Image (cartoon, rainbow, N blue to C red):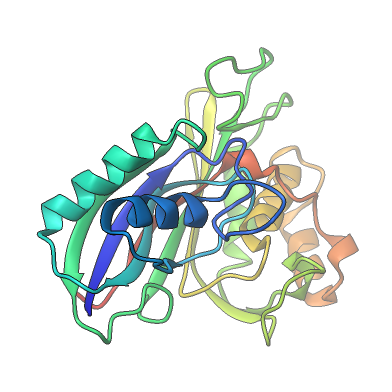
Length: 252
C-alpha cells in the first residue's frame, strides 16, 4: 500500500461538512467517490479537521492508502477530473497537491497546528459576492477593542465557555497560540492558531470578539466569561459560512 497526502480547497456551501454522513453530501464522500472512480478501490480518506456544514477550506489536509503507486501528479489530476465530471456531486472541491508520504503520516494526529480564519464584512450594505463566504455585521466594529479582548484568550485555558454542547473532546483545556484581529477597509479578519480546537470554538470566540468590537463586552467581561466556564456567558456562535480552515502545519 502507498500512502498519499493531499491538500484540498473547498467551498462548504450546501455541503454537510467534512465527514461522510447520511443527511447530505460531504467533502469526504466526494473524495472517496472520486478515488473509487479513479482506481476502483473502496478508499477511506482521513482529514486533518472535521469542518462543520457550511465551513470552507483553503488548505485542508487528508491522507489515504492506495494499493498501487501512481505518480503524484496523476493522483491530483485524476481526482480533480472525477470531481468535475461527477454531475450529481459537488463541483466546488479542488485537490491542490498530492504527494507520497510514509506510512507513519496521519493527517490528523501528525499535525502540529491548525490555522483558521474568520471573515467578516462590516458595512451597512449586505454582501452580494460574499454572502455565503463571510458574516455580515452591520454595526461598526472597533478592531482595537476586539484585539484587547482577544489577548485575554491567548494561552492555555479551560475553554468550556467556548465549547459546543455536542463537543466530543475529552478535555476542554486547550492552548490557543494565536488570536488576532485585523481590519482591511470594510472587512475584519479573525485569525486563530492552535494544535487543536474544541467543536465550534473559533466561531464562539469570534462571536464574543464581535460583541467586544460593538462595545457590548469589555476585555474584562471576556476574561470573566472565560473564567465562568459557562456557555451562556460569551457572545453568540458566529455563522459557519464565515469560517475557513486555512492551513495545517506538520513537522516537515
